[in-house]
Image (tube, rainbow, N blue to C red; front, top):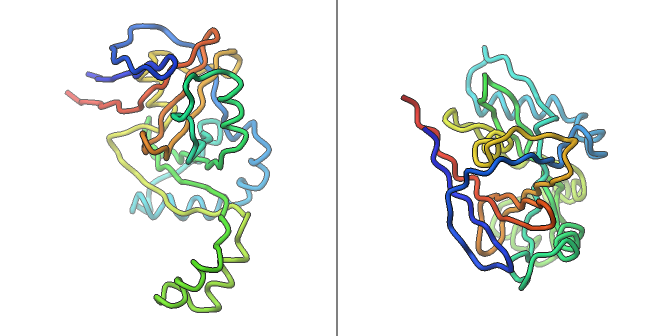
Length: 218
């Protein structure tokens, strides 16, 4: 049995409801994004992180770039009085983003490897990192050399959960279609919603969709 909740937001008035609507949608995926060229060169590292998360050397892992999704983080989306195509696009254009890359373990089960660009470290923080022993001078210099390049900060595996597209399919009730004109954008790390959520653009209207889908096995 699947339980889900959709939060629909129109001019950011919050309405809680159960949805029986059928959706068709498209998502920004890594296989059709220019970032693929650089990130695909990290495959050995992606597999190492995934293998470490599974802790089973005999597992046959497979990266699926077609299901790797872009998540825009630390946005100001909830500061908007009304969500429109213009201010949504402006928010996305100015947002930092990460890629959540699924590595298939078995049917509908994935290790999620986070790939993000290393951010600058200001001088004050650099001093703190040296003083508290987090880095030696040499280690800090190595970290500074990574600024702007793609890195892997974390990877996680929960055998009870699918990847982001699988979660969204469960909530919206329809498999995603890249050719569909209705878009879903993933955002996360906002003050009001820390966990990733979807913004669905459908027929000129927008919905914010939570991904809190609980799968219960009989």
